[in-house]
Amino acid sequence: MSKRILPLDSGDFEQVKEIIIKEWGSDYVIIHGDIIHPAELPGYKIMDDEKMVGLVTCLIKGQECEIVTLNSFREGEGIGDALIQVVESYALSHQCKTCKLVTTNDNLNALGFYQRRGFYISEVSPGAVDEARKVKISIPLAAENNIPIRDEITLIKQIG
Ligand SMILES: CC(C)(COP(=O)(O)OP(=O)(O)OC[C@H]1O[C@@H](n2cnc3c(N)ncnc32)[C@H](O)[C@@H]1OP(=O)(O)O)[C@@H](O)C(=O)NCCC(=O)NCCS
Image (cartoon, rainbow, N blue to C red; front, side, top):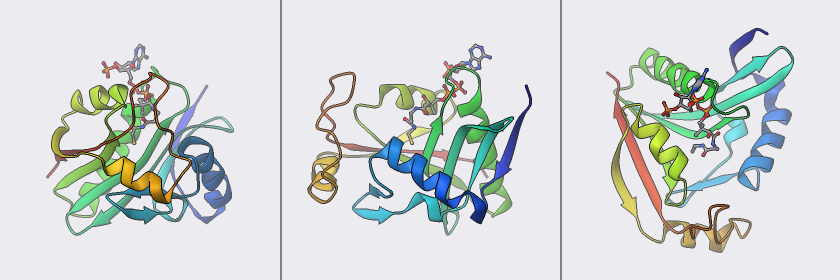
């Protein structure tokens, strides 16, 4: 088995869009009230032969690189870790000083995953998901772990 990390290109657009819809409930996400279409963003995929096993999309604003979506489709094999590393390299090559992402209060797995990799919580926005749900009604009220999905949590990491 040979895994390869590749930058997304225009040929990936439809597949990435499909994955975003499957994983995030529509072809857009709402972060701090902004509607963002991840398939239109730069990013990377991890391929294991012909199968996509990881996907990350990101957005650079000034000296900050925001991870918009990050998904591992085979957990516990280092795919998430590799996605973070490639985004950090991308961010550094674009003169960014920080990486940032927004997750939600229910996502205990991601909160642990990022904090173990040097990210720290920089902001908590109580009720931000309740607001987003008024626009994107597909956002579930609760996660699979039965935690109500209510708040946005911003994590940040200094990289440069
Ligand atoms: C959060 C998420 C990206 C993690 O991805 P992942 O591929 O499981 O991440 P990794 O495999 O790199 O790391 C997970 C754990 O597996 C362990 N691991 C990695 N490779 C391993 C291996 N070969 N053998 C045993 N354990 C291993 C790691 O040590 C890690 O544990 P740690 O966090 O305590 O260090 C994934 O759970 C996911 O896609 N979640 C849904 C989407 C999401 O919430 N995204 C984040 C918000 S944008």
